[in-house]
Length: 291
Length: 278
Image 1 (spheres, each protein chain N blue to C red):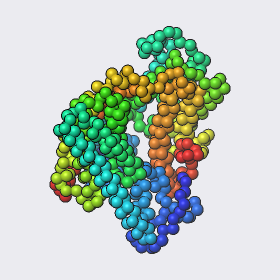
Image 2: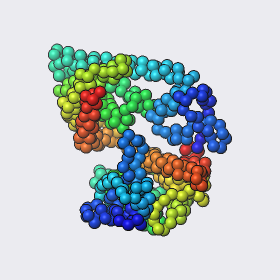
Image 3: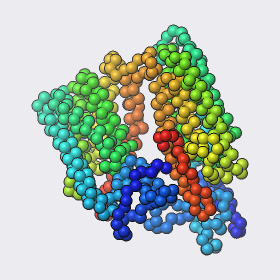
Image 4: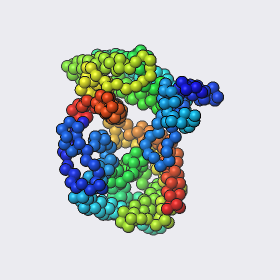
């Protein structure tokens, strides 16, 4: 191979040899020195192979790992969001509860109708953002994540939909409903704006990479997108008041907090103020004033 | 990044870790990595602090305290389970399987409920066991002990109670004496290690069969009773049906059993090969 060959070229060559291993399934790393600790250096597809040879340009040893069957992130997100989008209206429109032992007609309260619209808007927005807004740092995700994530979203979707649309549902006061949905809507719009800002941090060339987020709430919180998402669900729950909804809120908040801590850590490590790199400013991680 | 109160790290000995300075104020502070740590990292934090001379002696004291506490804990619970096994065998010989529960009820409830402490131990970093492994185990045990046997007396005379109680008590006697010895004496004899990682091969199947069997037997009684059920309508739009929750618990055993068994087989391989090379 010539000196200008990139890691991506190497991946294509491996793929040409073994059809099964398409590039997104390969993880190429430099061999770890025996006895050293820490993570191995992963070869980045758009860098040149010579960048990884320290001096010895004749030979380069790489370690190959098969990541398993991969799907596009957009595929993963589409399927996990489609479930809730479809399931909630099923509980709202169809007489599901007759099969669960609740005979008789249902009285549908306004809050239940607004909840259905709010919920479906949320997941429709997520699907649209997946295809038109987000720029992913990795193109693919393992296939097993499809099953895991769909189980999570679809189960919670059914769990919440069951209670919000229940024939014996007890609505909250009109004022509380308005406050809840109003606040939730503001947060949904803010969340959308956060996603636009994040998108503009990355170049359309699609090579991922990290920048210091800035603008709007990002000036005070690293993961303002997660913040607005959590508060949006809080608004939904204030309006609909189900234990199921609050359980989902807590679980989702925990998961996002985990991600946010990792991202915050990563950004602080990357932007350490040395060698001309900017220093990552002091910011909340995800939920001021707690963390 | 929040700053914790800075501690003046005295002594210039090379043995103590280099103090980290806050870039903004210049005050000594903790390395930022330690501020975003899991609870089990608190022990590492403590070790970092206690590596310094004045706190070093306190480190020895705290470590000894930990050992004393854990020894007391493990041996106390050991005695509880020993009682369970003793009374169970005694009842079997004297009155037969239907009398076993009544003889073991108190020590069983005490010993099994005390195990909740182990979740706490894992959370604060006193022991190294992952909470994710202990939680499902303790969950199923408490479910059987309180949620089935104590709540539904109709199940207490079934023969599966005997197999359950005997499987659990033998397993726990071995486990607690193993940990008790390690904490008190610093080591455990190899035969005890072998027992700990081998008896599960039989006791897991017998124990789990008893658990699943007893839950299944209790189902009609659970369905007939309104115990632990929350019905709609209510202000929080919540419901809980103990009958369906129990069926869900049974369903979880299906993937749960091979997962736990494989995990223990892996642990066995690790533990027994390590003792060979040691």
